[in-house]
Length: 139
Image (tube, rainbow, N blue to C red; front, top):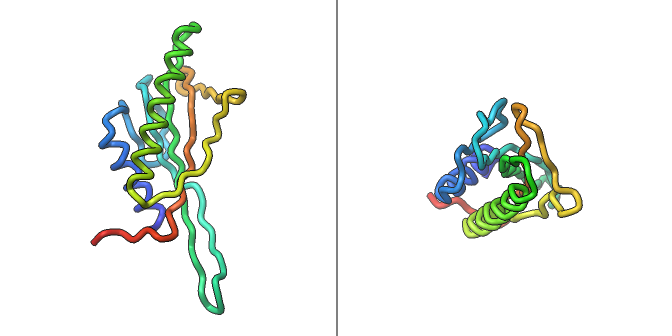
């Protein structure tokens, strides 16, 4: 499976979860103040030499989940709860496909990233996916 196919599969899985205002396959310039948002981008590609004249290609994608962060402590706690539910649901659904190995997210409590997009603060968590070595697409 190449990265285009991996992004399409990840998008389809998230579309079926029905928890997002918008899901983008690739970078976008604006969220239009919507929440929550998922953005699926190509992450990495690598080649590993297996044997003489034999290579394995590994590819990956990155699922970034954004939740708008309104002012106030209560709103911040609600954002964290919503983000936790979305990440948990996404990880479970993506694993269930059998297509992806899930890497550790980049958001720990002590380093919870907030991004300003269109002048609006969003809490974000990124989930790295690698196409599973033994995954074969159904035809």
